[in-house]
Image (cartoon, rainbow, N blue to C red; front, side, top):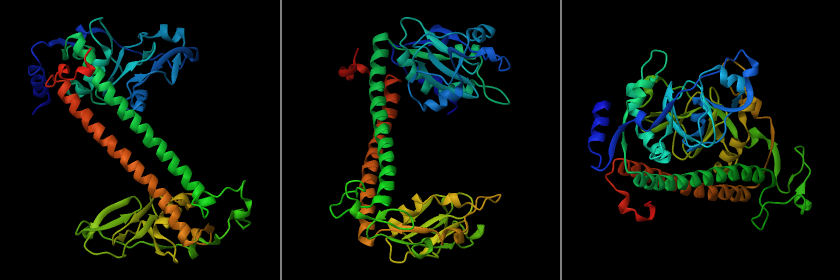
Length: 412
């Protein structure tokens, strides 16, 4: 269905007691401008000034509370920008169309915006959610050869639903609640990822004692020993990397041979294609040799290591999942040969000394990390459910198919 017909059909199917209005009737449409960059006294002042790039960096967050750049009063008066009050809806209408946020404080913008300062009867929080739905219509109206831009006239003539004020507030309350739950889950995931990275460093330098706890070099120095690498846990051995994990260059594969079967071909950037027969029995560990360096992949099934990769041919009795954790933390990209294409020479890595725990402790370290992986996976699952619920609620509430009278806890 053409986009313009989709928007008209959307408007035609709204509830009877919802009005339809052009955007310019919702309030004042305010453009922006940029002071001359050549005049230093126009910059580094105290007037917040925002660009579309900062909107992208918000990642969909509702409020813009601060800006990277500020202009002076002289810069403000030198151009056509305007100071917008808190609660204004900032909308990008140039290059990237349809990014929206509410201003958390007074702010000015560059020319990439058409912002809305609402009349009293229109609720900014409702239109923050609605304008996400209007992005396809804005893109349809955009024009330009270098980048898309929507004119002030076309923007002002976009027709939008205007539910009764009480229903605007109720719809916004529902969607704000689900957004808050999504944001909380994202924060938990980010925190768990930080904990995972920090814990891995501790596990690979302090290890786990007989009680299943991280060794403490301050409280129990007797649990550590001197080594060529400094103080390491007792029982750990120092050996050359190549005596613990022998890296082997991957195999050539032609374009014609790719995507002919079910066997994953693992390149420096991960699974890049499929073959009809394996070159290596799984499980295995693969890292980048050429192109993308540093990423490490654990492959649980038989696979074909691509020529752009290095695979662990011999683990010398070490745990394979532990090998993936250790090699990933070793930052192999540090040893780039500094050619035109990033390249890792295994002969540079093999002689390097590393310290490894015994096999039983390797398994304990893997289990500690896997426990965090399970928690992260659970939070990611919750995030997916909430995102699906948000999509469904937006579709139902912003079309009026589900009325907020059926959601009394959110009714205004």
